[in-house]
Length: 272
Image (cartoon, rainbow, N blue to C red; front, side, top):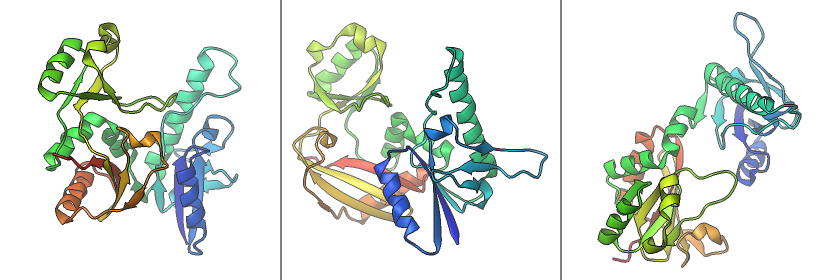
């Protein structure tokens, strides 16, 4: 029996759905590791020079030997939250750092199966500047883009691109930040200087594409929305869409360049 591990949040609907589907297969065993619980009382052990096996507790309370897993899906992995039992200002940060380092170190040293995706590849590919550079190198067309914290540079950029949109480079778990259109004349210089952001030319149109790449397989859906950022309203038309072999090959090349086994890529059909 093949054993699959999923690392994600307690309330991750996507991760939990996949875990449920995997459990329906008689030849598979799925273990779901909740990232938040690992910051509280979940069991974790790693040893060197000892016969004790590196072990992590899953959401069902089963203690899983890491080296027994055949595949590990790092669905969501970010620094762990704080322990609710903290008694000082120092303790929350210490607990978070120690648990995060122990979990990642355990997985990196003891897991011998297939990563989806490897944490180091994930970390690098999550950076939007890396994504954009690799996408251009793979022959994908990009909107004109500027990353800066200088208002004067934004104004000069707007002169050549026209209407601008702005989006976060990384964002925050505290709030879901959408891509929005901006009026350069209304930007606050101090706010721009405080936080770099991604500024891009606006691509008109209502046809958005989401490409889900799994190894050599590429599945594309067309999402129809007049909103600049379709994620603001998920109650929109969605249908399978054929993009052609040339674009599929470029997406596969991008996935390989980023050293990922799976990835989700957002595109838009330009009306020009």
